[in-house]
Amino acid sequence: GSKDGSIQEVNVSPCPTQPCQLHKGTSYSINVTFASKIESQGSKARVYGEMLHVDIPFPIPEPDGCKSGIQCPIQKGRSYSYLNKLPVKSEYPSIKLIVKWELVDDQDQMLFCWKIPVQITS
Image (cartoon, rainbow, N blue to C red; front, side):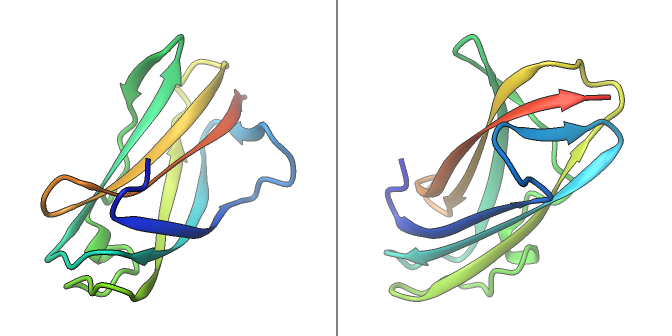
């Protein structure tokens, strides 16, 4: 679903195997390298937990892409490294789900969207 950008690499760390074992009370590093097909003044991340075909919003501390490694304004044809953290709160249930991470431009169009299977554990 990456309409306005193309993903070159996604890195979730630490996650040696899939599904990623996400331990409660731990923060995980997210690093996405993508090339932009458009110009945009800004970018905003939206993260969801996908369970039984329902998207549950997953709060992240910094949704602003311009404060997450991306030099704004975003230029067409340039590559960017998006860096963020995925905090796993201790009150989250121990379940298997899909994490869906989107980054939208200033027109609310998708710069990138990727999914990864995870297992939340204590």
